[in-house]
Length: 217
Image (cartoon, rainbow, N blue to C red; front, side):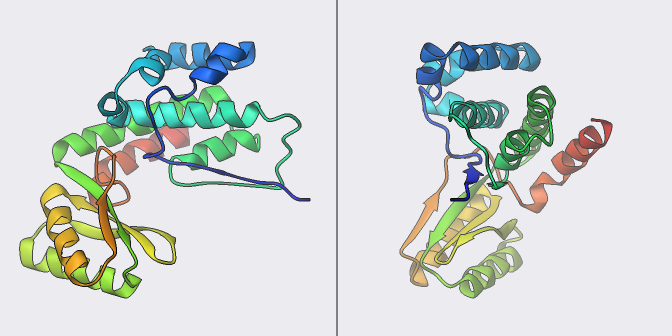
């Protein structure tokens, strides 16, 4: 049987994540310690003892989810994936899993990505929302209409699966769009526990900074 591993992105974090691995595996503890040293702060302490709000900060969320994903993967005996994939941030975990990039280099790049995106988030209050059970074309149409009428940034960002599309934009734009989506028949319009409008034009400054870091790695 072939094996495929899919790694999560931002939004998968939760208080206490990774503590079981840390407490029961010397190898996992070593990876936590390496990450702490590279990041320059105690990510393990925040993961184990921080609040949901602490973990929501982009500069914390991304290394936390990445670290937890890689440690969980490396804890699987005889893991030999035929395929790996990742959702957004999860691509870095996938690249470590298939040996394309070292753990150390990935931690550095994830840290740069997280700080660059945190800065972009701080420039404009922004967020994302999952739209459930509304046609993609209708979601796109509403986003375009909200942008045109309000001048706020709102775009279709993540086409997760049939019936679930994530939109991204300014807080005001997302609030307006979510109300219209529900009026148009969406089963739910759920604002996500993320720190900003990822996969939107508001992330352009972060894109440029990360690209330079990748080229230099």
